[in-house]
Length: 223
Image (cartoon, rainbow, N blue to C red; front, side, top):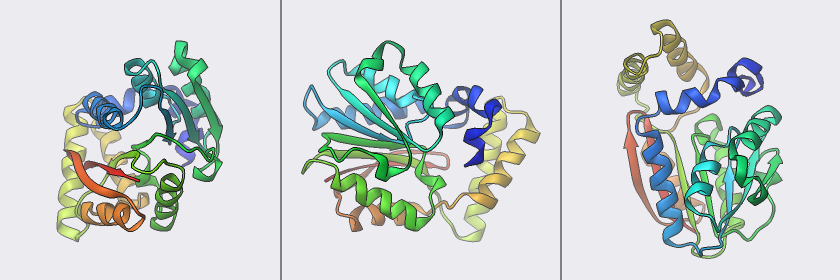
């Protein structure tokens, strides 16, 4: 999205997820625990949508033996990620582009946090397929993003709740309203059952939800 090439938006990116995503730090922690559950101590991990570097840093802080390949289409966000990972930079390789820019692997684990709600269905399906192809057999994949009921009444209700949560978390009401309108107009959000079905259809096994908070959901599955 153009938003991630706007210098002002990039400069303040790190303020957004902790304020607007319920339990953001816990989501990162849960994702790391699930990846570690079936990964070796020296795991090679693929992170799609790695711009900003927040999950790269969280995972690297928790797992000193892991190395990472982070992929993101925004050059500016990748520069921010490079700064964010700090002392872990020697274990992180960053790649500008979409999922096909990721190395072939094979990877021991993969994560895609707060990214797939930007992808139209065909693009999302392709991303999930490519990630699975780059994983070792049985390797874990964690995905978390906006996912809520899409029938008209429930969609409106969840968008209103998300707006209210943003205001309760300190966002100015007008900013929260603009965010709601942007989500409503632009983001190709799926219902949770659609998201889970997509993971299964593209070959992931033992798919289960591990995170649900507001308009966000998260799943783990295995290649």
